[in-house]
Amino acid sequence: MKGKFVVANWKMNCNISEAKALVSEIIESYKKLKIVNCKLKIVLCPPFTALQSVSLIIRSSDYSFIHLGAQNCHFMPCGAYTGEISPKMLKDFCDFVILGHSERRKFFGETDELINKKIRTVLDVGLCPIVCIDEYKKGEKSEIIFNQVEKAIQDVKEKDLEKIIFAYEPIWAISTSADRQDCEPSYASKIIKEIKELLHNKTPVFYGGSVDVSNISAFVNEQMLDGFLVGGASLKPKSFIKIIETVGAKDVSKS
Image 1: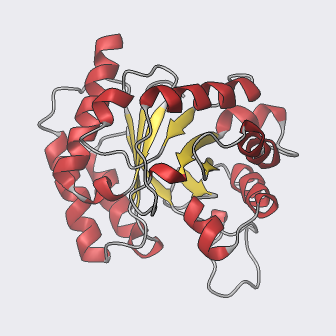
Image 2: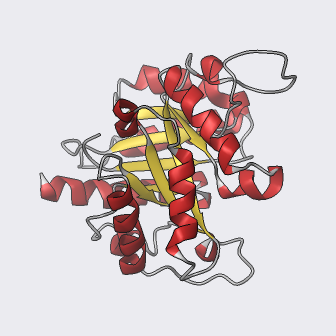
């Protein structure tokens, strides 16, 4: 997976009309940027209800580097699971799916074992999982982070490792944290370097801790970071485009 990524997690925001307006504004704003030669990949992850509508707009844009992702899925390809969405269903629209996000772990009790099941099924149907790895306290023992990584790839085929993306999420740095602290880019780079070494540098690792226009310039200078998982800032077209422009401009300068 060459080039940098910017992934937008819209979470439980945007009905269909709002999602269509948001993606349309992002695409129109992107056309005005001077980063067309970069290898940047943009992944938009709207709610399930907006996937089809957003997919149609992306496909009509002729921008092959803009992809669609989902925010979650079930661990079975089909079955009697009322109200759930399977990876097989997502395959009609998506290339990516976010798994193991801290909010899924916290509010819905998702375990490392469940997330591992999802990862393996997602890979089987041909989607790319973006697996979130959490750090709840700054300076938390690396063993806790590494344990999440090791459980995520348990029983995953060797050839499929390079098809997984990981996203390091320092929970203490997100905007909803009661004890929020800023995450220094060098600290994020250190943790991501350790994660990559554990994975023998076979998979990209993103950073996802309240990325916004105020800190993106500092983070793009860290070579260890392969991309960014963006939350609230991705719902504001001007902010999100500025993040894309900053990451893309850095990508162009290195090519």
